[in-house]
Length: 361
Image 1 (cartoon, one colour):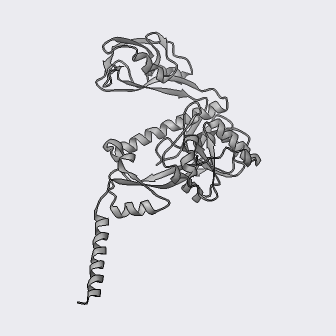
Image 2: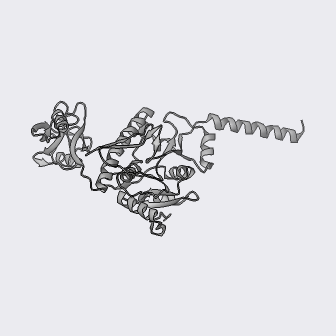
Image 3: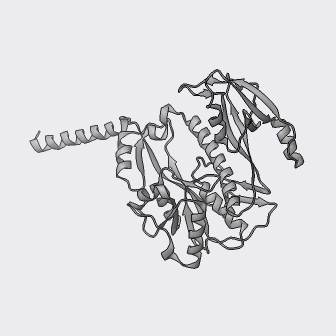
């Protein structure tokens, strides 16, 4: 066989071997890519995303799109060829598998966590929106979870309203842990609570609950030595009218800002967007603080692909997002819901020079 033919054959066989290896060799990576984007002012699957009853609403125009990131599942084993393609592709990001699924988290566990975060983001979005509009929201601290085999099991129940700890009034959910950890493990602590059934009955009747109970428990020791009783405190809100967010198959907390802005837009006569296509992302706290999210590069790509011209970007994501901005998209920096509302008003008025834009620095 001629040398040239032998060389070509050997090269071909080597190429085939490398291709096979690329397909067969599994690597510990996962892929992120642009996911769906939904207009919070519009409809999804045939029904409005935001449904408000019991309060006057106003027509809206334009878009306030929440954005998402699509990720490979926890049990998907990426091969070397897919990883190389993802590294070279502009619209995808390949990251270590443990970045998306730390500590061996399963697909079911991740989905459950994302669903809980998504539900909490909806509540915070409602609170932040109404506070932005100076509409009062009643809030109270509750025992959101009571852990099995803990000092609180059988003594406190999920939904109990926590009024005091050791006689000190509780105003924020974070107060509970602060007051409990003042003790040493093995010491008693007294919770003053409204039992969940009485709290629910009072709310249904539109009255304040009148009866409280004092519950004594002996604290246990956490792995770090802190005194604990085995509950997770949270905040329960009572809204003056009904706000429903209808959006399935989405998880995580990153849509909070856009839900809040959609609610503000529907409850105010001024059209926030002025008919423009605005997208964005960001977690939101009850006080309106906007927090950073993951996969910002994928979200800007997905938003621009759907036609967005402006993208509301959490302050702490600005530097990363500004390194590779899709053509035709302007990144607007936001730190609070108030920042976002002011920027949208400037945008509606045509004052684009006043917009706080993201930079790569």
